[in-house]
Length: 355
Image 1 (cartoon, helix red, strand yellow):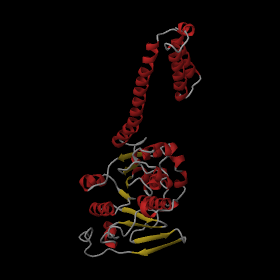
Image 2 (image 1 turned 180 degrees about the vertical axis):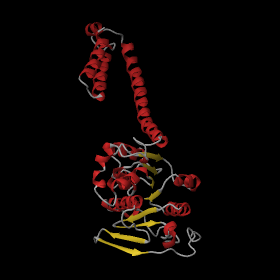
Image 3 (image 1 turned 90 degrees about the vertical axis):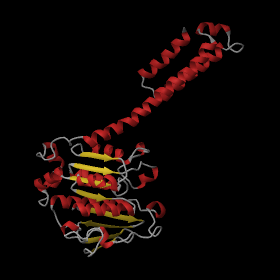
Image 4 (image 1 turned 90 degrees about the horizontal axis):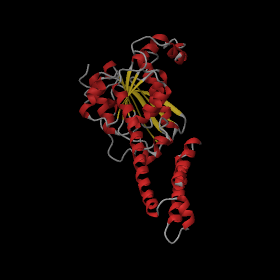
């Protein structure tokens, strides 16, 4: 039967020459349409129909049947594609650690990877070992979280947790450099796993695809040494601040909008103020517009996010003076940065009763 052999020949040619699936499907569809027309009563010629073989009704039924099979295969492929990152995230969230023990010595490839850190006497081998053993939680995988995650992974922070309930959207890609066009619609934490695993296989990424809420947040924060807050809503900022203050965990937090940003290390357990000491009440609704409402310059989150990661590296290694008890204000439009001193506030609802 020449008609059936034609389908087989086209399929084999597509496999042999690695045609795109769409081209093979289009050629098969054209061959099917030709067979239907040639064998149709009153339309096709008896001679060619007899040579090609097959009954008109058979060829007509073959088309819908093939569509059903192709639709099933496409749906199955889509489910598998969606399941792969979810499975990878689940494995990452429960994995015991990155290659090599977090408390073990640096491996030869890690020594070469982090050589520029090892040359800094403020970090050196002992500081890099502390980075490897550190557990850091990043709240938010958006504008601030993206550069934070990149530089924490590049610096060799051994265990990085990231919590976010959002998915990658096209408008994010103007500034959220950790995500990519081919990951649109994917949860941001899974996109982060993909990017960080490609950057540094010697760090363990623990994704938490959910919103940080009071229920369960305390146990999550207790599992980490340091928290970096890159969220864009006041409810979460105040919640993270209170939980970190109660747990005695340093909190590196930044906020930004349009052309300006601010950054501080909130650490009342070590003598500094907490976020609520300086901002005791959130602003009235509508007073501070979000980035979606007011806009934001694309490099600004990168500037502030890189500074957040720098503060984290300093806190972990003990290098330099962190922004504890100081608030940095950055104006990108006028290229001005200034730092002001801030102090704990007696009677603060978040940390006033802490020693």
